Image 1 (tube, helix red, strand yellow):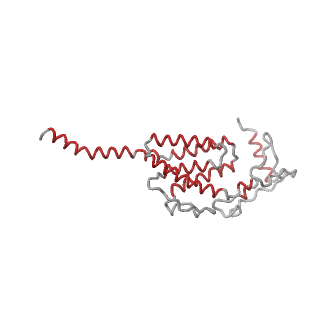
Image 2 (tube, helix red, strand yellow):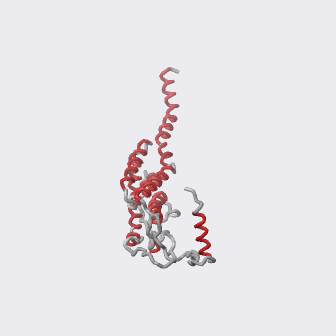
Image 3 (cartoon, helix red, strand yellow):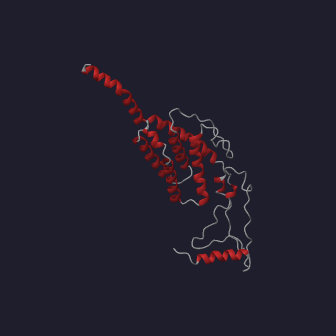
Length: 249
């Protein structure tokens, strides 16, 4: 066998390996974007923004809920058995076309972050994180058309989730009458050091996600207020007081 023929034979034998290697290298980005830590980092960024914007715990629960629903729906929208549309109160998501080259992981992150911006004040912090995430996709070799399709699809889901959130009565509740302190002993009183107002006294007027109303599962009623030292209320209050005296910094 001549050298020329040996060369071509070796090339033919090596060709499948070369093709397989190229395909493997071109698909390594899929492993990177499938890492759950990617979405976790989005949630962590929202948490830092929530702390920065100083939202109360009840309001924070709403800030987390809608972006999380958007991310979940973006990932499972093509699966009727798992989608939330039609299962949550008043949530009907239209059939959003899913591009063939979409990455559902990237779309979920895009939906989460785009929805988040509708619920916080410091939108620039989320926008900067979106930019850094885009650079991450590029460095991992995600095809440009996949990034564009996934971002567009995720933001389309976010648009519908935000529109749904606007009808949950939250914005209207901002103008409802606030709690007025009473001189009755059993009523909530502003206490030092912050003298904070009662948090969200109208929260029961916000549309629930799954329950039909807040009255569907009524908790046990609190122990009646009493200043009688032999009462159950006084004993519980005194237990809390005693514990407060031995707490360390």
